[in-house]
Length: 271
Image 1: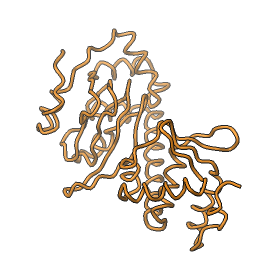
Image 2 (image 1 turned 90 degrees about the vertical axis):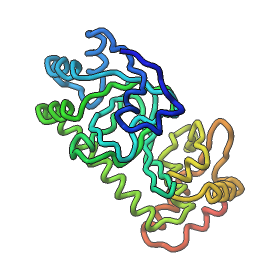
Image 3 (image 1 turned 120 degrees about the horizontal axis):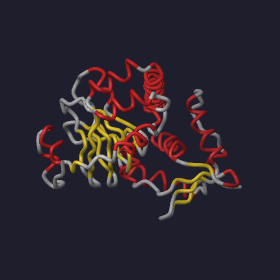
């Protein structure tokens, strides 16, 4: 089955029609489908028979960049496996406040909470780039989880990890200043590079970084400018370089351990 992607009007349609508005991607040949599904981290090690049963209950959908895949309040229970592309998970209030919970990429999945508890969606998921998804009804997902101990254990570990991360974020929001929350997020987003530095590439837009840490874009801009002047970071089009990640981490740890003032060496920047 194929269709035309509706991008401008799709987000104002009710959930059922929004789902119909997605492009239904032709499923790959059976052997290719099984190979693709078997490479999903959650399903690693599942028997060929169970994989075949699972794959037979899936459908394949594509979304253009910017399209909403699921929205808050949708009464659906589908689980989505990302075959290609990247998506962003966001929560928002009726007053327009948005908080970015995170980005997911190839091999990740989302929607499992609604499949487990049957409650309407608690977050919105939007395609950041063109995304190709393998979609399965919540009942089929739960059949596999409950019949496969290895899949069930992986799901439990993932949910436990997410719960720990949320606990960590709650502590940060309750204890850390805006500057320190931003530092914590930059450290999470960065990857190591030679000479002990870390880099974030491509650099996140300031309003997105603000949405990740619960503040305004102006606050992010001010704090990043101060850190740049101190020589702690360099901000460029290609990325954000953290020159002294150990000092940045020390400021966070100092605050979390109860010290009201960060180490004075933080203000000195690079030596």
